[in-house]
Structure formats: C-alpha cells, structure tokens
Length: 171
Picture 1 (spheres, rainbow, N blue to C red):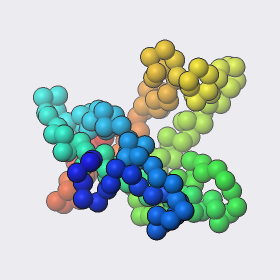
Picture 2 (cartoon, rainbow, N blue to C red):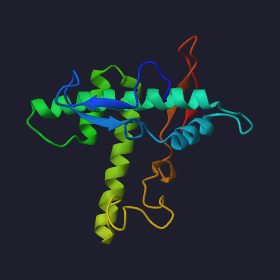
Picture 3 (cartoon, rainbow, N blue to C red):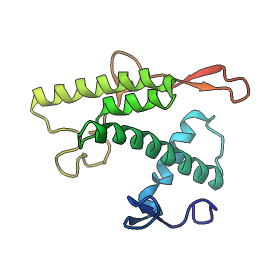
C-alpha cells in the first residue's frame, strides 16, 4: 500500500535500525494482492464485493502475520544453531505466540504434506518445489491441496468478532 502511514515503499531488513540492512521493495514484502483477494472471496457469498482498501489492508495484515510467526520460528532456529526453519518450528511459533487454535490444523496440514511428499518420492515424482519452475503447465497442479484428500478438509473456525464464538468452519 503506497499511501499507508506505517509502511514506505522500501523497508530496511536485517539492520533493525535501518543501518547495515538491505532495502526490500514493498511488492517483495507483501503477498500478491490477487491471491489475498481470492482467499477473501472464498469465505464470502458469491455476490459479495471486496473493496481495494479491504484487500490492501488484509494484504498488510497477513504479510505481517507471516513475518511475525516466521521471525519467532527463526529465532528458535538461531538459538538452536540451525539454519533451516521447518514446519515444526512454525507450529511451535504459533503456539508460543498464542495462536493455539491454529496449531492443530497446521500440524494436520504438515502431516498430510509430508505424506504427499513421501508418496511422490516413492513414485519417483519430483518434489512439489522442484522440476520446471516447481509447477506444471498451469502453475498450480503440483501444489499440495490437503482438503482434497480422503481424510477430509482442514477446518479453521471463523469467529464472530463481537463474541469470539465459532460461527462456522472455514476450509
């Protein structure tokens, strides 16, 4: 968002105070807005519209959330003298940061992902992120879609903002 008061077009990375860090462009820091809009539309009725402002706000929020959780997972890896953040580290970070409702669905997703990768390895297929660009001709076929497996979809509950109670499953 170019006119957001909290974010400039370039953000320092690595230096904390901006010194010694490299600058990254806003489009490299944020998830693609089209993807954010598609995800938002999945939960809304078919005739619902989403404003550009709502998409940009959500884009900032989800990008910040991912950075927040990943940063916590990265700190854990750094303390353990490891260079690679894995799915278990992300689950640990979610729990540590108080996002307990997301830990079990994430663990189920991670388990299904690992099963899918194991099945691909046994069949001699390349991993989802390998091969020609990591994807097939339409760019989506090799991505894991756990909600299409036999064991049922991963469910996250949509919460009523006013009461905090679960309204309906979100998958």
